[in-house]
Length: 122
Image (cartoon, rainbow, N blue to C red; front, side):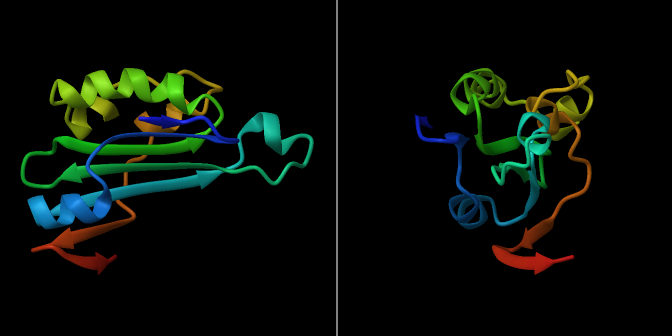
């Protein structure tokens, strides 16, 4: 789904809380940055990205973005998630530079994990 705010919010799949409850063992990848078009003029607008992965299968089970064009971005990501894409599939995809969407295929290290449904800070 998408919320057409500024910036847009796009989401597909499970939230972090629902994923932890259902899958128990998940990795959460997060990124916050200023897109180039906001950096140069000194804007304080940030982009936020989150990918949630089932550790037991490597399957991407949730993607959440807050950035310009999130609606367009999440439409394509939704297809991948519905088809059962894995984190390895995302990692094997070449990012298009310079775009905010490339962040989805360049996040390599989990920000934190859940084991048996409990958050573990790394």
